[in-house]
Picture (tube, rainbow, N blue to C red):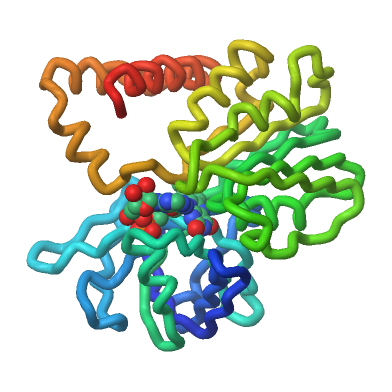
Length: 300
Ligand SMILES: Cc1cc2nc3c(=O)[nH]c(=O)nc-3n(C[C@H](O)[C@H](O)[C@H](O)COP(=O)(O)OP(=O)(O)OC[C@H]3O[C@@H](n4cnc5c(N)ncnc54)[C@H](O)[C@@H]3O)c2cc1C
């Protein structure tokens, strides 16, 4: 894993709530896209008011990173690589401007010359070999990935994208591809309760012939707990036929504090649920369901 230094080349407002920021710079010469449509990177932001001063961590042998002692810790957030153009040495990242937070605030004020760090990408979208149709469901945070997934979908794969957005003006134009249907519904995104679970159930109701299908869902983390349970427990989808990824947490600023405030016994109970690192994919999904159910009972 490499940590790259990236410089803002251009900023374009796609909608009132989304900005596309293009990065370039020598630090990106070694950046290698995985080519997977939902590939994401960790972004390392400036720790202080100087927008060109980023305390880049060192990468570690186990794929992580560490900030050398005595250096300030850079705030880290996770973002999708909306486009990588190695021929131009450029990367695009689309930021939701949700009005709070380090990353959103940084993006709203971004100007050419600003500097951030980013690491090597990881992709999660992994459709089965017999892919014949897919359903992509997300709120605004997953829109960059949905756009890139649509671009990369082979002809002949029927694709239905269902987007939960605060209002119609928030959705930038999506790639126009044959066989792709896009539906938008209003809500969620911190403006109201998310209906991602209902949207998934409506798009793939019980009794659907699941042969050749793949389901990808991203968005507000706690709204996705019911999605995972529905796909696994009601539709009985095997783990390789879906991917559910929490993209943002309501009350993220206090989540860690609230988790740390749990009694020691409860925290050990939660961490011991992950003690079996070799759990097969099916078990890992079921374990995640049990873990998330426990978090919900704890108000997290
Ligand atoms: C794999 C992956 C890929 C992602 N790709 C993208 C992407 O391409 N574009 C993108 O914009 N986001 C993306 N996200 C989501 C992004 O990481 C989070 O939204 C992140 O919390 C933003 O950081 P922040 O500093 O702006 O806000 P934080 O400091 O994390 O949070 C501050 C407050 O803002 C709220 N908040 C955070 N995100 C949102 C949101 N999207 N809508 C409404 N309220 C919010 C939190 O609940 C919290 O109360 C991705 C996340 C993952 C895990």
